[in-house]
Image (cartoon, rainbow, N blue to C red; front, side, top):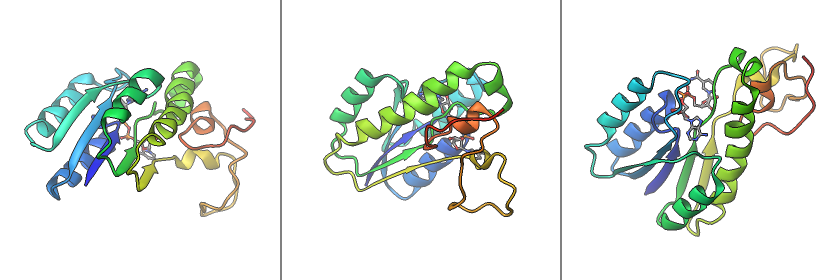
Length: 168
Ligand SMILES: NC(=O)c1ccc[n+]([C@@H]2O[C@H](COP(=O)([O-])OP(=O)(O)OC[C@H]3O[C@@H](n4cnc5c(N)ncnc54)[C@H](O)[C@@H]3O)[C@@H](O)[C@H]2O)c1
C-alpha cells in the first residue's frame, strides 16, 4: 500500500511513518517544518526515515492549494491518507490565531479537497483533539458529545471541528 502522511516530521506522524514502513508500505511524508517546535528534532526524525527505500519527503504546506493539488495529482498510487499536520498548542492559539486558521482550518479543507483527486483512495484518517469538548461538563467525553462549547481557538479550529461559534 502507498500512504500519504501529513505532519510526517511531527511526533505522531513520524511514528506512523515508521510503523507503515516497517510493514513494507510506501510512504510519502508531508511537512512544512514549522518552527513552533524545535526544527532540529523534526530534521532528526526525517533523517531516521530517509534511509527507508519506501519513504519520500515533500516539504509542503498543507494550506497551499496549488502545491497540494499538484502533489496529490502525482501520487495516484496512494490508497490511504493519514492527516496529522496541524498547528498544535491550546494556549498559543490565544497569541497567534492566524496560524490555527491557516493550518487547521484552511489546511484541513485543502487536504480533503486534494484527497478527492486520488482515484484509488480507500481511507482518510485525521487526528482531532479532546480540546474540542471544551466546556462540556459530562464525563467521560464521548465522540457523540456536542462540540459547541470550545474554549480556545485551537479547539475551535482543530482538524475536523465544525465551523461553530465560540465562547471565551
Ligand atoms: N500529541 C498529542 O498528545 C495529541 C493529542 C491529541 C491530538 N493530537 C493531534 O494529533 C495531530 C498530530 O499531533 P503531534 O503531537 O504529532 O503534533 P506535532 O506538532 O508534533 O506535529 C505536527 C506536524 O505538523 C506540521 N505542520 C504544522 N502545520 C503544517 C502545515 N500548515 N503544513 C504542513 N505541515 C504542518 C508541523 O511542522 C509538525 O511537524 C495534531 O492534529 C494534534 O492536534 C495530538
